[in-house]
Length: 93
Image (cartoon, rainbow, N blue to C red; front, side):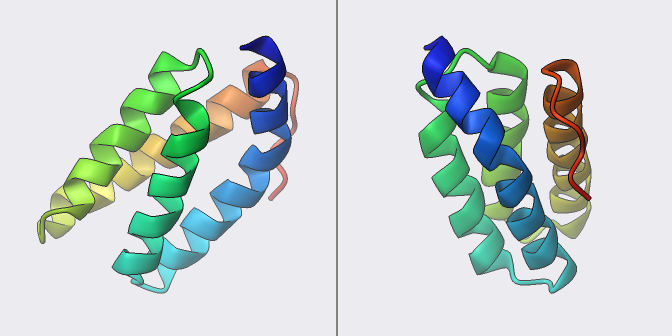
């Protein structure tokens, strides 16, 4: 689990960038795909806060509620930042 988490941390900045680009481009299908892919990687790691934020975003993307999507995106983005910061990885932006 810790090895998988370490691997996830090396890939997280790239995922964060892809998610951010899809969100800013209003590409909800791309965003949904990227979040789904990241969730697939996180399920094997012990990262409940990150998993929860991404699951909430994934659920919000199944709706057309822009306010919910926006709030969940911000939470997920901030949780990714926190995960990177507290794990010793600098924010790559």
